[in-house]
Length: 217
Image (cartoon, rainbow, N blue to C red):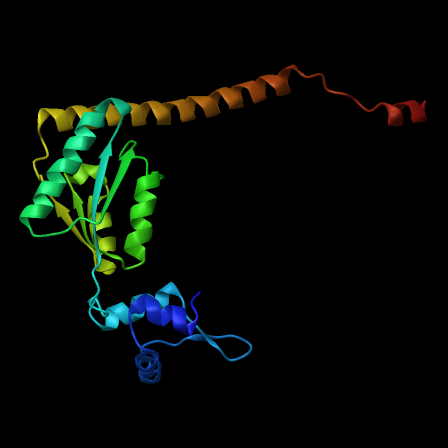
């Protein structure tokens, strides 16, 4: 939740312009019991949508490199990703402001670095995200990431769109095996639990209440 001052700073607009947008019906601020205006991230999105997702304040937005490998043994590949993306940005005349990394499977969407990246994108602070290939975000969900990022005015730049090199296929295979092992462990874990529960129920003696029978005698 933002105050008027915080909101103006967030979207890069003067208070008078914000009041004009309110009068036009572009945004409808919330009101405190005391009548003060309050704004949310949805109001930020509405302002950017109205201006065509342009950088209203014309201030520099972030250019972020996101690099990821599956295991600690691939640290050299992680460094190569970062260096390749930096060189690519240089040839495009882009200044990299942030480098975010992860060592985790692409099937893991609870990555620390990915969360950091999403926080920046959702704050409308990122103009471009540079990745070595689509697998760095997620092969199975890349189109979803691309669609979401566009909504927040962020473009994803993929340096290498070659998908079937031996190294990439090997990495994907390892991740798939790891993912299948994880799912299988969960399934068999539940089965073992149910089996032990059933065994417990079947082996425990059943206590009978003989009070009523004793009373009748």
